[in-house]
Amino acid sequence: MEKDNSGKPKPVILTCAQPTGSLTLGNYLGAIRNWSEMLDEHECYFGIVDLHAITTPSQPAVLRQNVFECIAQYIACGLDPQKCHQFVQSHVMGHTELAWVLTCNTPIGELQRMTQFKDKAAKLGFKVSENTGNDDLKFEHQGARAQASINAGLLCYPVLMAADILLYNADLVPVGEDQRQHLELCRDLAQRFNHQYSETFTIPEPYVPKTGARIMSLADPTRKMSKSDENERATLYILDEPDRIRKKIGSAVTDSGSEIKAVSDKPGVLNLLTIYSSLSGKPIPEIEEHFLGKGYGELKSELSEIIAESLEPVRAKYKDLIQDKAYLKSVLAEGADAAQKRAYKILSKVYRKVGFPERAK
Ligand code: TYM
Figure 1: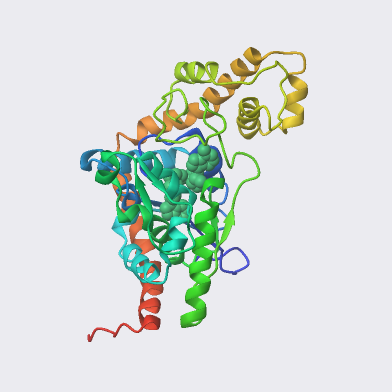
Figure 2: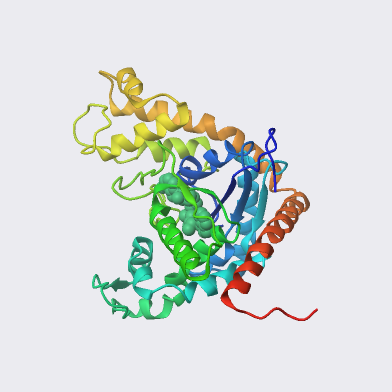
């Protein structure tokens, strides 16, 4: 247990990201940049969730490499290994074990209602029935591809995520807006378990930043910016070179008219202003005033430079770190040890409460 200067235990933070290649500007602004500002006041555990990554089709060699790229990006974004524990989910025994216990306490209907499950299933060619009143899985096939690629892991994804959090009795979970529903489920599962088996889990609080919690696609600003977008102009990656940034921002979809105003019927401009504000630290009204009488072109070219400049130190640090696999491995080994220590205590308690007999020594 880590303590603050007055000797009080620091609140515990747990949060994770999937190792799917380069992190996006959405991951950075909605999540990782904020994590790095919380290191001093909290005991921090940051996971790279490779078990989650296999819920959608993945290739072993690519997954292995992505884990290294992800840890190098975590550190490059400011997650100082001296101040937090960074680990790979599959290195810590307990995530899948707790997930199983929680799965046995989760009605299927609650999982079917998860927006991300419906979205991902739809991408794989399934339509999930809106009839969530009963627990029957109702999928309509929309092509042969769907049958081949949907798996139970995708449905159980949020339970594994709940296990990630509850296994550390985390007080706070910093995430972007898209994870709010999963967090609600996690809180429900914790409360249900506590009610059924007596007080065991801390009920975690979500921490969603005020600006940048939902960065939208550059190609379709009504949709979230996502790593898996097929349109390569839709997503900015934190490792994109300045030229790419200029091209992507230059071709970002804006709205009819020419006024630079953050209003809901101008989702394209609103998104660009949100990114501008998150990176510059300036409030949106001040930015609107700055662009009074100017056009979208000026907004885009200034924003491109701000993004390129803000990400330059991240890119430079990443290039060094990714060469040093031994160092990255040592960070992950420390992280796994610290995480395992904490996870083991909580998992043992859960096993006892559920009624699993203790093994003779
Ligand atoms: P993942 O890998 O999709 O995203 C990692 C973090 O980035 C945030 N994020 C965004 N924020 C703002 N705008 C966007 N466009 C955007 N896209 C992503 C996410 O909200 C997240 O905070 N299920 C999780 C991983 C996970 C997890 C956990 C998170 C597994 N176990 C336990 C917290 C606690 C996910 O897929 O995140």
